[in-house]
Structure formats: C-alpha cells, structure tokens
Image (tube, rainbow, N blue to C red; front, top):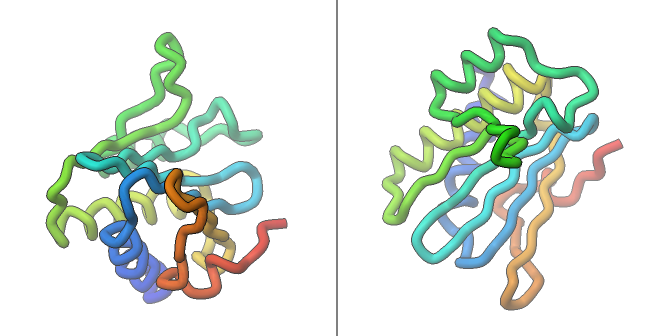
Length: 145
C-alpha cells in the first residue's frame, strides 16, 4: 500500500461516516470501474463493479482477494451483478476504516486502478439532490476520460 492509497482510505472513511441518509456516492475510474455507496437510515450498502460490466474481467486471484476482504461475489441467477457488502449502523471508526481498505483493495488490486488520482467522485441525496463531497478534495471535481 502506498501513502497515496493510505490517505484515500482515511479520507473515504471520513466521507462515509458523514453521509446523510438516502445518499448515493459513486467513485469511478475509466473503463467502467467503480464503487457505489448507498446510505440508508440503518445500513450502508456498497457495490464494486462485477465482471458483467468490465471489458476485461478480473481473474480468479482478484476474486479470491475480494472475498478475503469481505466482499460477497455477484449472483447472476438473482440479478446481482456486482460485488457487494452491507454494514449496519452504528458503524465503528475501525469498521469504517476496514471498509475503506476493502474498497481500496477492490479498486487497486482487483480493478487495476493504479492511483487514487485516476478516481472521480459524484453523489447526491434524495432529499436535496446536492451532496457535499468537499472532504474528498479534488477527486470530487475530477473528470474521468
């Protein structure tokens, strides 16, 4: 892990701990590589791109790595096409940091995102539409080509 990814994990954990109920946050890189967070009153649901959406599917070693980091694999028979995790509130700081690390592993090691500088964040809420992502810094304003 590099200092850049370590910083990403801490920043992401902070952002997730501040998400309001009924918020959606998507962090994406080019090539349809993304992670999506859905915040509800009692739970935080997270999805990581599955092979169904990737032009270059991840291999068995990457899939095993995701499982070791707590990701549940897609279940195509039930139309669940992405890797996913669900955490129920209250989520401890340690739990949020562990989730952020699993996200970093997913993006970097399974989906091949070389650096957080390749990522872009966007989000909204059902209530107001606007979601303040300033805690994520330039990632919230970056375009993915």
